[in-house]
Length: 323
Length: 229
Image 1: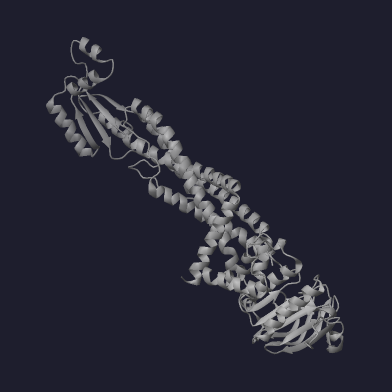
Image 2: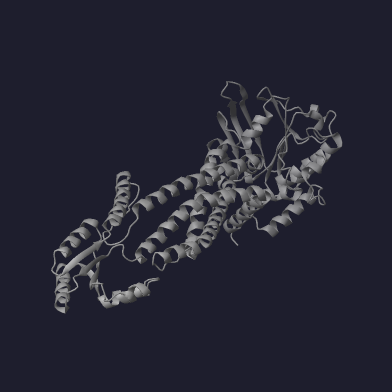
């Protein structure tokens, strides 16, 4: 075993010994780091789930065209060719019989439908536009309204507009601050505002983690000033003295990251049943997505990198004062 | 082995601790650096161990000019020296064995080899059965032996000791000097700074006398007076 490897192993052992030497203090530090990392991680996870949720939720970016009751096959074909012509996106024809069946299947509607003398529902087209910009959706809706045999066009334009406004605000702030490369893509949901908030939270709590490690290492250096001084006097290099402190910061960050993963996973397990129930009520089939194995690894890596950074800064500042 | 040439050390406040000090010590010599308190012994010790740098002049140890030594080379120089400090600088929260293992860990000896060397060093200074003891439980003489064991565990060619017999009774002081003598007899260069002429051994060692920061003539006769056998 090379001297280099032996010294790294010794430094690692030393930092583990330091962590174990004050278990309560170490545990509290890990909890603080864990909580600091939990908030941005939860935000990121929430955003990711929101993205999936909106992708799964029907109706958000759809336009329904309801035809007059006297519309026939020729009219259906005419509308299909018009849709094709203007490249409206993808569409699905919903015959009035199918619509009635769906209505019957809805809870509490079977009796009402059965009491109707005839099917009151019109034939309809459900269009999923390729371009989800509100202006484009409104233009499309207006175009559809002018077509023959179209009696009503339904677009939840207020919801789309509100959502779009939030996204644009996010994009605007990100572009103006130059703090991120959040791209606004026209064809997919992209929660810039959410990203921005998560990013700011991340920066804030990363700073907290670095500060916490900085202070822990400062206390370590103060507590071991005599040992450090002796080691320097008998031939220890700065690297030799700094190494266990760097390892300590890294270990603390790593374990704090794992602690955050644990907290987030616990929160995820608590929230999964009520969220599933809520989305079911809104007609979507959605299950919360927790942290994957690679997410946990990334979190631990981020924790250890920030811990190392805090230790590095602290060591640079405080070791100069000894020896 | 050690050569000082016109070494002057002046502190920023203007105090001149050493003035044009020159001497040469050859390999395997045992030299006592004597003088009253404030004569400049500790300053010279600090210069020899590169804790401080001379204001002018040069100190050469094993061909390395300490005045021109880069900061990052100082640890490697110190590893070649066995240093014993006036206040011993032991780690009181570590066992006797751990204290001796520290220089070996710094150099990067494999754990098994380090343990063997540390045990041998402790045996050499007469502390073979105190490995697990904390230094606080040792007597003054034993603590000094521990400091010597830590200094010699890396088998240095030069031992520099600052007041190693201070605060020790005559018997303990004599034992410590015997240990140094034993190292000198196997070829190690030993430099001992002491303010106490009574602690000088009965044989006629080489003495470098400092007086108010300057080197004065050696005084063998004074050394012999009331010397430790």
